[in-house]
Image (tube, rainbow, N blue to C red; front, side):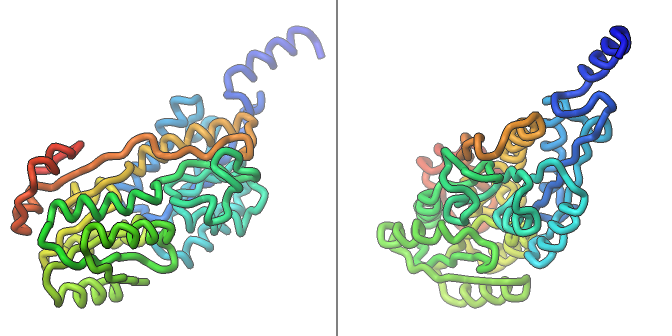
Length: 325
């Protein structure tokens, strides 16, 4: 090759991030999430992924192609969507939620997978340990197990007359690592724990309505794609039956829920984009330690509290990072 040709080729390669060829080879990212494509929160996560990757030098349509799929809280659809993504031969997979990781690794046991919004990657068998994942999967966890106890303590402060709490979850998809933490704090908060499993909207409505037949109840919504997809139904039932509730993500509260303590899903997806970038540049998931949340937010909806007839203690209100009025 002539020297002039070599210089021109090298200059062309410099226009692309490391890992993209001088011919402009487009790298492919397959992303699988549990929400609905039409949900503004789902779109917020997608846009956060694109934004952060853009900041890192990856632009959709120029040097990356992001194929994003949502399984709308239906684990059966998750498997079909995972198969579709894997057939596109991506360079890296992004799995948002535990069922997304499970579906993708079944279809692609050796492709690099970066996850977000996963509660217990060690218990689920995705990684050997947080510090040393030991395989082709790594990412960002969502909750510390002991957080579930914190949820109940905050809810009890808001509704001291509460005597019973329904743990609302989908048995197929919810991170059950949180249940021992809930059970452990039950004696301290002096509550009766009532499991309220539901696989679909009809079961969800039946479980909450049946629980509400007895007084002094409250709701604890487990973090999962299922309640996210059905959050309007949950919030409407909570309002109808006057049930104070603790929710896992901030948008439940901005849409009418009483309180939440947890992480922002778009924030986590943005952090996961950093690992996607590093994998595209040659890093191996086994060398990228699993990271835990670095930001929790406590939200209170005072309008909802008033509608429920609750007089929130000033000490509780003072703890809130954000108040909806």
